[in-house]
Length: 163
Image (cartoon, rainbow, N blue to C red):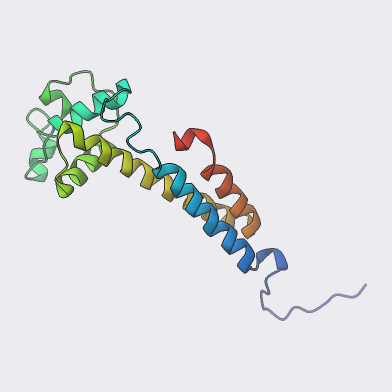
């Protein structure tokens, strides 16, 4: 039995090489994924038809940014607390709400008929970044751009994340 000596170099196998065709397919997945997430963003024509989104819109337009870290952690008086703004049954996470509110402040879109669109666009952006993360996870786990591209494509075209 003959044992081959290794040169110490890690030469990639054909499955590990990035090819232009798969890169182009991944770019197409990204473009179509972004398109599906951004088309029809104002699907309800400012009617606020979804009850959860309507509630979140009411809370997001009611809370206001705090002036200091101390004011944030003073939960009994914090202007970011939904409980201090008349929404005692707030059961959602606060970080996405705070991010949307601060983005809305920066864009000067804090009104009831404006802030929900900031939230929709931020949701689409985060979901688009998830498509990228699925691709990167596929590359890291399988070291195969084909699997990474297919995985990101499956996620990019899945109905539930798009909704």
